[in-house]
Image (tube, rainbow, N blue to C red):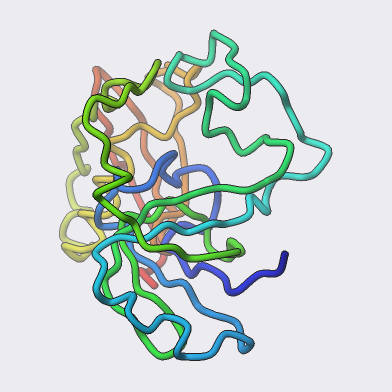
Length: 218
């Protein structure tokens, strides 16, 4: 297999990147194709609203293969077979991401609902087909219900320094609680890069308090 392009994302590191696509709708980015991909390769794709990105978990080393993992949705306390999870620690580091197609450009695709780190290699793009892929009555196992979202509160003064788009993205990304499942220390301050900002935050009394941030949005 060969890469057909790479992702330009508002997330530049694994921590803080959504664990699933679509749960942070304002997370936008691009799939930038390699020079080997002709412009006509996307002809007709504009007729679809969503698409699958087939990508490589290229921040996971080959030696990190695991057959049993601890899903965050189970608090990190229960093991499941890797094939029953979306864990990146797979025999082959192939992933699937369902994103919304915003625009088809000459050498790229603009997408939203992104859950991929900047620079992720893309192997393929496929249109999402609702008539076969939106199955009523399908079961979601231990992920049957969507995760509960936390309230996100910005500390005084920061709201005036950030744009509305920046605040919406940060709010959506932190509301789904990117902390490791076993972390529950209200005094611990976390930091992650979101849209070029080094955002500092902590969780107290069931809500996220955004403390500070530096840098600028890409």
